[in-house]
Structure formats: C-alpha cells, structure tokens
Length: 543
Image (cartoon, rainbow, N blue to C red; front, side, top):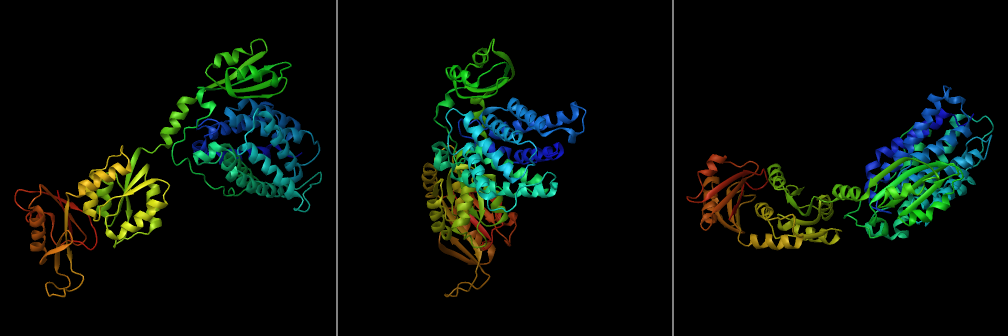
C-alpha cells in the first residue's frame, strides 16, 4: 500500500515542524486581507489538526498504521483540515489539502509519483481558487498555481517518473522530493512577484504571508522525504514601517470561524447572508459539513444564520483589533528617532550605549565605510536616525549613507567623540531626526572640546618630540611637554568659561583618575570617564 500512514505522517510532521520554525516570521508579514499577524498561527493549526487525525486513525481504530487504506486516510485528513482551519489562510490551506486529497482518491491503485503529485497540486490550486469569492493574485493562490504549472512542465523533462505497482519507497521519496524542489523554486519566484500583483503588499514592502508560508511548508515536506535539512527558503523581512492597510476588512472586529454539520448543505447558499453582516467570507465543505469564516462585528448573528440548518460547532472568535495592536507593538520601533555613533574604544562603546545610542566601531582611525554605516543605520530600532560621526573623516561617508538609506537620516555636527557624547544627551526619541539634529547642533555651538595625545612625530618648530604630550583646544595646539602639565593647561583653558568639564581617559593614559582630578581648575566641576579610545590620552569637553 502506498503511501503508508507512517510515511504520510512523517511528511506532515516535517511540514509542520518547518512551518513552526518560521511561524513568527510569517505572522509578521501578514498584511492581507487584514494585518492581524496570524497567518503562521492559522496554517500551523490546520496542519496540527491533520497530524492529530493521522494519530487518531492509528490509535482509535486499534489497527496497525500500515493497515489503513489511502481513501480512508485522505478523506479523514481532508475533513480534519477543514474542521481545524482558522482564518483565511487556514481555510485556504484546508482547501489545498482537500483538492490534493480528491485527486489522490480519484486514482485508485496508482502509487504517488511525480505525475500524481502534479495532478494533485493542480487540483489543489483549482479547489483553492474556487473557495474564494474574489481571488486575489499575488497571494497563496498564485503561488500554488505557479508550483502546479511548474510541475506539469518539469515532468516532461524528468525522464521516467512513473512507478510500478510495487515501487521502492526510497526511489519514490527521491522522485517526489525532486519534483517538489523544482516546484518550490517556482513558488519562491511567485512569492517574490507578489508585490507586483497586489498593491497592499507593494505599499507595505512585504511579500504575501500565506504564499511565503506555503513555500516554507513545501521545504519541510522535501526535508522529510529526503531525511535531510530543508532546502533554504529565503527569510522575508517584516514591513520597514508599520502598515495600516486601508481596505474594508479592517473595519470589522471579529474573525469568526465555525463548523456546521447537517444534511443537504449548499456552500453557495450562505455566502450572501454572511456578506450582509461582514466580509472576507469563506464557506467551504460539502453537503454534510461546512466550514465558515467571516469578519464581522456580530459573531452571534453569524452563527444564528444556521439555526435549523445544522449543528454549529468549533466556534472560534478572534478580536482582530487586539491582534493588529499586538502586531503593531511587536513590529513597531520602540521610538521615533534613534542615534548611531561611530566610536573607537571599549569604554566609548559603553558610554554611548548607556545613553541609548547604537554604536558602530569605526576602528582605530574612526573611518568606517559607507556600507558599514548603512548597515548600522538599518540596525537602529527606530524609523528615523541621527548619525553622530564623531570624526571629520566620517562625515562624507555618513552623508552618503543617509542618502542611500530607506530611513529618514540626518548627520549631526559632532566631529569628536566627546562632542558626540554631549550631542547624545540632547537626543529626544519622540522628535524627528531633523528636529533632533537642529537641537543637537545648536547645543554643540556652545560646546568647546580639547584633547591630549602623544605626538606621533616631532614638531617642525622644535616644540615637541615623538611621544611628548600635545594639548589641543578645539583644533589649536595650546600646550606640550609632560602629560600632567599639558593636561592641566588644556583643562585650564577650557574651564575658564565653563561650569562642567568632562575628561575621558584613553588607552594608555599616563595618569590615573586621582591624578587627573588634582589638575582640575578650581570652581569647575570635573567629571572623569574611561573611554579606552586609541590615539588620545584624554578627550575633554567643556559646557
């Protein structure tokens, strides 16, 4: 008998396991028909119901799992998928499963091979399209159709794809996995094209969640058939900014799902009454069992429509307003505006991070590339970003990165690390990047900076030799010689009109904190920090 329930269960479990591993990624893509963030959940629930039914067939019937025929398996699985489905995506997946099941039942005695797989995929696509009142291209429907079309085309180039009455299971698995991997690549291409076909995907900057989930699911099937890792399906990023889709489904509050069992039930009969109280209506099933999905503000009225027609069961009501708020909260940047500082020195990393600023290691010379800056900007968890270059070397690359970024980016006037720290204190995460830069740059106009560094080369005028301390105020050399007197001169010059001096010790600074404090000017508060920066023994800022 083929397929055995053992092998079928392994395939379903493989699909579910791989889908579960990507569930949150899929949820975060979900913007159509409503951005309720549950596509991954709904499709996983449908497969979970299928797996539970397979186990029931084995356990409840007290039979060996290889003693159950194909017809019973597929009929039971199709019904369990239908009853376990929730949401648009879950119901459509149940119809894909039912369509495939119908094709398998229609071919008694045939082993499952690439030809039968192709026919089953085509029937699945047909059944799914037929279940939706107004099918939208660019969605899971398109992905399934393109995969089925690919299989039909590829079979002609695969050589002998038919199996005899007693096919080798290993050969069978390999053949099916091969044709499914070809279908998977066609499905991925269909997913990538989705935004070209559906405006809400294009506007939100995402692919269709259901279509992407279907490719993930198929990759899991291939992994189970081969007993290997799943083929790579590229990860899809959620919307760069939170989407607020402006289409009718978002006006209704409750995603309502339930089953109806009875006699002589006609799915088409119930569509119009349900559309009178909501939208996103799906009514699928047969004369004995229907599965209903509707977005409505009145779940009770939806179920009451079936009074006298059959028994309502498996009622599931989800508040889509709550779901959308949770999705927005999950995806939304925690603040409107963030900052990226280019730094050098472990202590500098810590100082900027303590102020809530993302950091990019600029190396000993503080000179990152444009693309390193662009990546750093992308990683800042905010819609807008202020870049603190912290070196004149960085300004041009930062401005170029700002032009290339999809985010709103502004480059501040901070040209040193000590100035960047003062700038970070002025950042307001609730204001725009433009407003923040205006405030920061205004504050920096009242900031004076200085530094003490060991001379890298001898002075042409004979003032200092290599290794001597050289003191700067802004860009002018004001002192040189021994480290202590040189630092004292810089602190005195900066402290003349200041209330606060901040002195940041660098790598290899020759004085400890007590020695630095002893050099501070009288009447001026001196704050000491450890920056660990290379090249400069001390960086000083005066406010």
